[in-house]
Image (tube, rainbow, N blue to C red; front, side, top):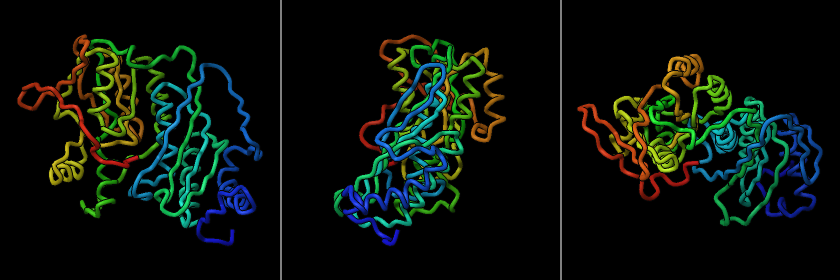
Length: 336
């Protein structure tokens, strides 16, 4: 394509739209699906139930340590399928691009999305592109919709959580939130913080295969604390976590201390919060320790009792217990 900036006419449906799709977008995803340019993609699926999810990505900045909006748009939707026990298979990609957006940046973002999906064994099979006037959007927004297969016999969710279940996190918390915050605000923590953005489908499938997982979530916006509250209310259980058991990267801890933030509320894009049967603890921890995305995994708490109000308690290192405050308002806007 001759032009180095996106023009409004690239979204007109005419010759420039054809140029953008056929010369920039399609070649990047062609090796993933080999689909013809039709109005719909045709998909072959075998066995099990279908899981489908959709999410939109408006993160600022577009590029950050450990990832970019393209990688995030693939990982976020793949992970939403994986935590439901589904094996992700297909993605659609919807682009809303602001007039004037650099074509080179668009290529980087799409290649990142394509490579991330391919590495997770997921095909990008269809999509859409719209261009809006300068000032009507902030550079680029992406929507991805994912389809996966839930194998026969797999059933995960809040209703499967039982009293006595262990609460396990697959690694350090708050890395993504702190990495994006530092990049956005120009803060330096010695260059030690990168987003944990990663597709979790492989790790999730291994964990589900143990037969000991009752529920999983990826604690993105609002962090571990918000997911715990959501699940406590949905399952009508009281959950207790041990504050000092929650793994935190030392640089994230330092940044939170400096900024007055609690890492348990910061976003993650490559962590699993796992509810597991206690008799399967050894097997599940072995899976985590032998996987590159789970080596820092730890048991951080337990489901202690039934409670219609759904409480989350946190035990301090002195043994005192307090109710974990619910996150109110927007902690870090446009984090994903």
